[in-house]
Length: 382
Picture 1 (spheres, one colour):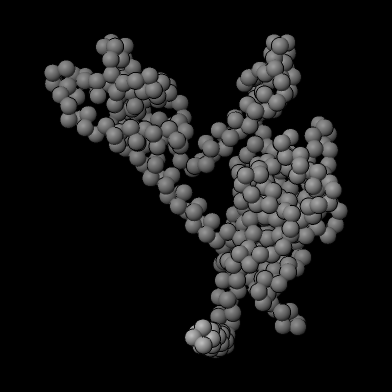
Picture 2 (cartoon, rainbow, N blue to C red):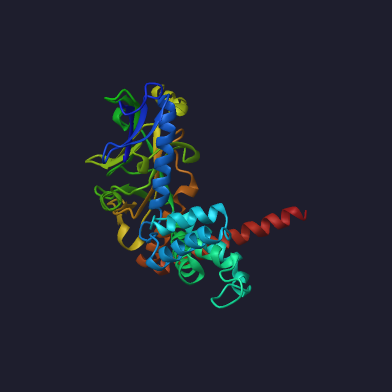
């Protein structure tokens, strides 16, 4: 976690609680109470997580943008007009080469989208009366049409592409539910720092699931190794209660959720906020006795099917490609929706094994459905 909360001698006695940057020990803020300091800590971590959302993209202003913003500030000082306080603040950030946020990139593009007509006004171009016009100064403050607009437009296009890819991944999202079998699979522990944590296993290796619709499933050891190694230090998996986005217990990007894979399975340790102590109590009382996780996988590399000696089919999860949330659940059941993606894979696998049998079975099911529909219609007309 980049920051921690502790009492600091760098803060005044009236505000002893500090948010301290781990890298250099600098204080980000001093607060009267630990709760206030934790509130700043959460805000800092959320901001950092948002900045990592598109970490493959470069949000640092290029040279042309920096120079144009500096020109806009010089014009503003010289003429005392053009732009707004927001534009001036934006220019300072751009001129100083400060990395912008994804949301700022969208705002820059939106600004130039709205001000296309400024380029047609008199005084926008050198040699015209009134140059530089208010619109020309304002455009410079935002980095300029020639440099900042194409830069921001490219960033927005790339962000939209990444968002679309994530959306497609969510179409293949699967959830699995684990009923606790051993005491260590879901428990409440008090850590060395006095904080209460929820410790559990979201998945256990080599344990067969319930019937998912003609087949069962097992998660193989190492299924999470690649995703955990790839995401280590930059993952943003959240801990939820009952997969509810409104009941957040922690997240990896803020350091309140830790994930690891051991010989037993996928282990999670989450330190929930004080406002979620009701969940802690439910687990302590054993009213809640299950865990779950949401994931995606690549059908080509992430799964395989095998058949047991008695003819049962087992889907093996070999490599998870995306891990989205983990956490305790009230009822560790397998709703049909949680295995819909796996069912599609199972049916595809069956078709590859013996396509004629599958086609024949599908035809039989279709005949049964047609007959049932005919009887239903006849009964309604009686």
